[in-house]
Image (cartoon, rainbow, N blue to C red; front, side, top):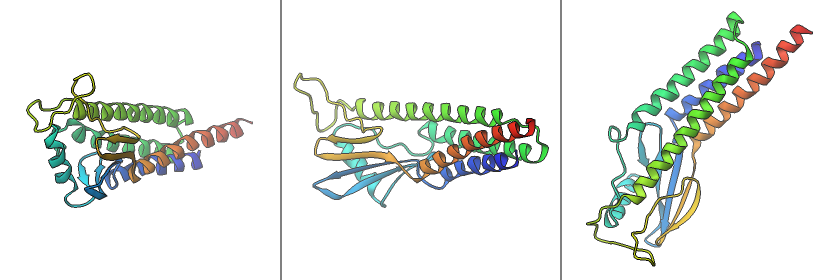
Length: 206
């Protein structure tokens, strides 16, 4: 179980990369912004890739009635996500050390941690998508520009959760950022810890 426990410790600790690097990135490119406007989404904040990107995006969105991009304290997820990620990282590291020194942790416990973390990740992505839907759908009816579709219904401007989308004259890309890769790498290592731990137990019983 020694190798499995070490993998568990490293894998769980990699989640802490989410406190340093953004989880997601949204980039908008248009003729008036050929270099693009970027929005980095961290687990505790939303920041512009460049200094004035957030203010420029807010100014553009104001004309079609979109809300301003939330700041810390204005979005409960930005308060809760750091607690959840930090808690899961600490729990995973603790389980790894218990397996390393006390040898009372079975590989199935590592797998349960991974399943719980995966479920939390899926719920987080679902919540993020719901926020994007609200952000692009609940527009100010008194906005300067009121655009409607061919049926006369108000148009929505929900950015894509993943991939590319054309929004008016903007090309919008939405993809995982460096923090997401840290999290993915960590979860892969935790899965490997489960496999390695199972093999170790089978050898001990043989």
